[in-house]
Image (cartoon, rainbow, N blue to C red; front, top):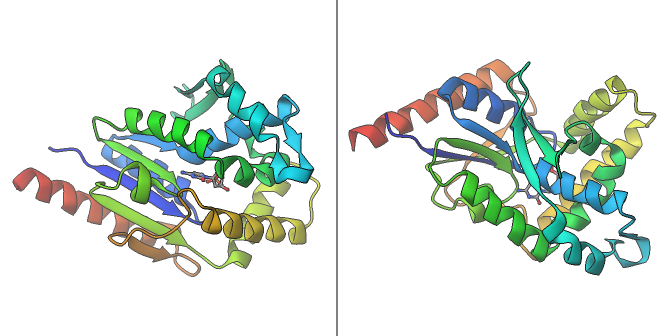
Length: 235
Ligand code: DC
């Protein structure tokens, strides 16, 4: 059976990673969370004090000159099979999910130098196909030839509610309004940046899951993917 490339883009907290992970599992493909890579670079910047509030939040010069020192690797968690991100040998899967990282990540992700490095690595990981990657520019920039492109969206209130619950479960002390503000300001920053803004690829399938159940949505996507794989093998 031929293998395809599946690109999943969309706004934050639309369930991209859940769909991507389940698809990869059902098809026995590799799952890559590209947002985790931008978050890990952001964590590196925070830990090294590359913060400059006056200048869009991040000290760009310092971060650019440190890029060669940042090594990102995905390692498989033996217990749940999830590919977790390691920053210079340390598993940072949890450390990258804080509001502090969320607050700075759009500024880091807007830097062309950062994007160039991460896109190169993403293309290398996906060069043999059989990959499901989620992010913002996967169908438009990283894999413009992906056989299946999904663009996931939902209202910002619904997405903020999902994220708020996750953060509360993790014990973060935060208000709903702060989370909503972060979701909306990241949408704005990600969609209006110059380099690889979040836009839907022309050939993507749009999925608004504000009201759609997770199971129903997943079944539809999986059967669509299987059709494409079968078609590819026949043709
Ligand atoms: O999917 P996420 O919320 O973990 O992504 C974190 C940030 O990284 C998000 O605000 C936008 C950025 N990002 C990006 O610019 N390009 C990608 N391919 C993935 C994420």
